Image 1 (cartoon, rainbow, N blue to C red):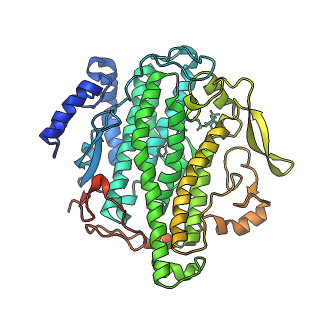
Image 2: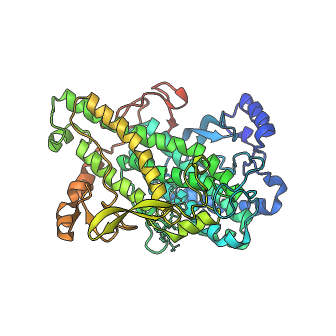
Image 3: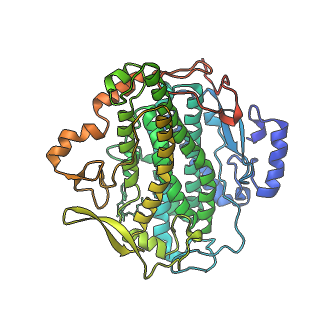
Length: 501
Ligand code: BYC
């Protein structure tokens, strides 16, 4: 069906879209919108059309629980021009135009790192790196539907229509990111790729027999505070990994990831502003009630807001689950992917070095004689650690904003990132226990004290008790402030989701 047949697609939108078809070649005339000339690529079109019904079945089974017939004010990508690429309109989620959109091809692009440094970027899969490339694309693809599965029940407890809409926006775009990886698998990896694409619809987050591939994507997202933490911390791992893959010598992967990053920014915005709004509301409620001690958890909770120590515990959990997503600090997989020209560093082209890393070192945090120390390792094998360090730097920005809200409210409380040795399941610190300050402790102490640092079941029960849905237009739950600005600059009383009755 043509996009213009969709409800609310105005003539202006169609005209603008037509112009962009010229510039950026986005074709909405096929069932699968795309800017990769799918209508000329019969074999891939057939493979994707064959995969489509399974995707829709997956969406119906594992996508948002309920609300499938509601009209949601969603943005849809109509172009890949960073200056203007999306249009907002009411769409029923199953009618969302999931498409294949690659950033424009850079003329004469060369491989920016590794043993092929300076050679022309590949437009086809290099035979010797096929298996490695496929594995990374499959891992990337696997995370996208996993997050939708993790979040599927959250619509039932949304704190407002604004938040409900943001959840669904994130969900449909993660679905599109799955399409992006499936396109690469089906176009460039033949039969293996088609099988992998089918398996992406078969695995399920948290399933005992067929789980998703990476740890954090099998964890529950039990409530909206977790959702905001996930979109802040785990989507930010997505940002870092997509940046690294956007450097890839395999040009179609690079172009796909570049466009995905455009969409990803909103997901992290949802997380950052979501946590800001929770912190803001808590501080306002404490102030209004004359509470001067933010650690007086019982008194704060009685106000119907989330106390700051519990916010810290949630942060500890989601940050450390996300750190695990970077793999081991010292990794030959990472070195091989870099050498091969498949996966680069964050902002690779802006780094001033030889981009081959044959002789350089990088300081890695390791356990040496029972102490956490920085040890120089070959930079090539330390690439996961380096990316994780870049990630931590990026995470800190949000904490500065949240802490500013707390200090402006007059409270002596600081949210902090825990030490990287705390609560780890992957890498150098997976077999030890440490406090959030990085002090090594034995198992008995860990078991006794862990509920001081990570959400306990009581904390979970309290947060769950706050999660009553608010669906009145312009209203918000007691535990979260309204946003400063609306989506697409809409006013506070805008009906972001027209819930079917
Ligand atoms: N859980 O050498 P190692 C996103 C495995 S998020 C389970 O230490 P490597 C998104 C590893 O696979 C971004 N297994 O690490 C966010 C390997 O297994 P094999 C997703 C793990 O390979 C929110 C073994 O341990 N994209 O987009 O250098 C919403 C030894 O591995 C884990 C990517 O991750 C784990 N946490 O790096 C929606 C990019 N960590 O091969 C979406 C693609 C490691 O021995 N993936 N293992 O069986 C990669 O670049 C790499 O695979 C990793 C691991 C960074 C994940």
